[in-house]
Image (cartoon, rainbow, N blue to C red):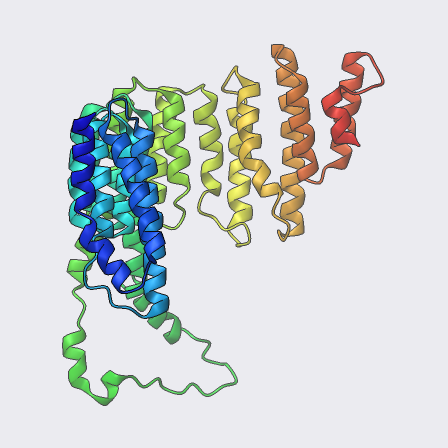
Length: 450
């Protein structure tokens, strides 16, 4: 116990100059300094004695963080310039001791990381990342966290490096493969957005063509548009855009979607053609609706799924949904895309034996469309009729397969109500009563029908 007391006294003596300055500048009163010293003494004796726990270090670090927050508020309120202070350094020291003693506790590591990020201590943060990844290389969530941090700092090269190193240790982690593809898609979306803002995506030429192709017989006098180049022709010499360079930039793997597709192909080889994982990739890619390479990426995934699993509901549902992805429901192109999607639904139902699973997936992506309130009336009517028909097909298929349950019936009622098909709800409830041979609904349906 003497050893623990000596260590505690040693660490406490290091904070004496700081406490004296805080008292001298009247940031804390003498009684507050005494209370701080007693609290630190209690923590140090607990930490240096046998049987200390990770929670003891976490509470000590939390106490120091709260104390530092209070000090900063008082310094700001009193307008005092503190020339000597080691608050963050002390907190880092406590957390460093914690992670050295309990290196297997991820909670302490995350507390250490979050505080370093909050203090913007980038050098220390990189050191923490190196240490925690060296000690826990088989934790995919750590690799994803570090990669996201690098990507948020616009360091895509480091983010890719972390992801690739993580996949060497965690090849069986589905979430890591999905996160890597998501990282690349976010990068493609950022590049596409920047090109659009800078006018490097062809919008300049389109705008000029639109201006030149205005109606010649309009009842207005078209005035010429003056630009800085018209006033000073020398500005045109430095504003030349290398179209060849821009065209070559369009073909880089970062913009054509080659990297996400390479990740998808590698994941399919790693997981022996898992159709549920392929569907996860498809749903991930479908969420990035404003990138130029999206049709190519989706088509590659669809081709792979239909070739590998031509009768699986996951591939057929994605194939049916594909025409609607990236199309604004309020645009003039949406009715045509919806028509193509409905044709694919009809053909897909004939190519699988697992019809109830297919209908369930189709309902899953039709339901959000039925909730859009400001759609064209005709389009809204078609979507509602499609939802109603698909729900009926789902009910019939589930009944034939012997998998129709009360929970599924409740879900179908909710879907029909969201789509505004009240008559469909009544017919569904009538069929349910007839099927059960009673005039009463099950408890779950009674709650909904009230």
